[in-house]
Image 1: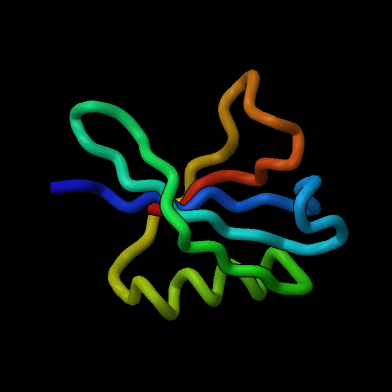
Image 2 (image 1 turned 90 degrees about the horizontal axis):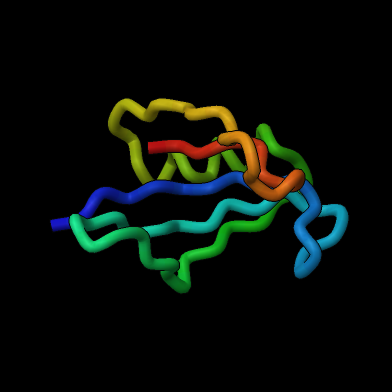
Amino acid sequence: MSLDIWTIYDSPSDYPGQAVARRFAVTAEGATGTDDVLVAASIKQVKRMVQDRMPYLLTFLPPSPGDEPQIIGCLL
């Protein structure tokens, strides 16, 4: 069993000028990146895209100290 976490980025190096959400699967062994990537023109749009895929209640976590500066936060 895993917990899905979507990390939200603002203009990451592989998608400059875009808002990006990447899904990670978290298990007891740690987090593993998946091939699920959503791209939109704005942070608001990409958050809405994640919420459309995961219609149940989502919690927003702000970035942790030491995270890449492009990370806006995570939705779970």
